[in-house]
Length: 207
Image (cartoon, rainbow, N blue to C red; front, side):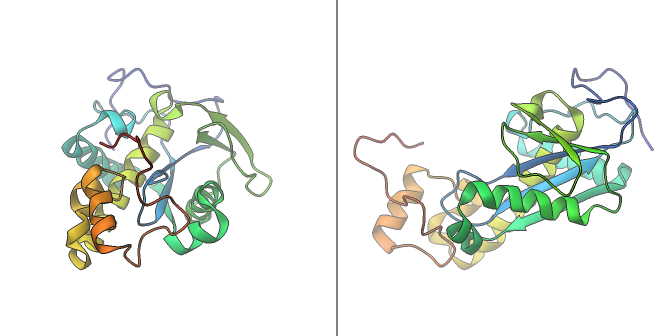
């Protein structure tokens, strides 16, 4: 197993001596597709020279880190909450449910959970800590952010093959101008979140 010391400024732990699982999600602000979460328990000294908040990385960098995690980290898992579930229970609760599913899938239960953000639904009786912008602070959360993002991007590329007109291979379901124009012209696909405002509001700026 490869250990790289001091190559990023992310913190290795919150509570020394405890088994910590970092959790993060991807796709919360999208108009289509699932929300995906990841949970990761990193070895104490594991690091990667590129590891950071996934939003600050290029696609190639994210894939490089993902490969390293898959090869070198034993305890990691993915949880998915579908667009139907998002419409039924709302995106916030769906994000928490996806994280719970990822934690359920971990081969080993953690002593505590580090969650990116400021809110979380309790998971079993395990203590948790919410960390605002935690994916740029703790390695385990950053690793979870990379796994969640890359897994969801792959899912959206697969859905793009069914509905190429929405360009999910590029926008991944986020509300870009071209995405919303396609919705306006063609209507919503079966994978769009019906509880979301799919069309831009007047004077709303779009990417």
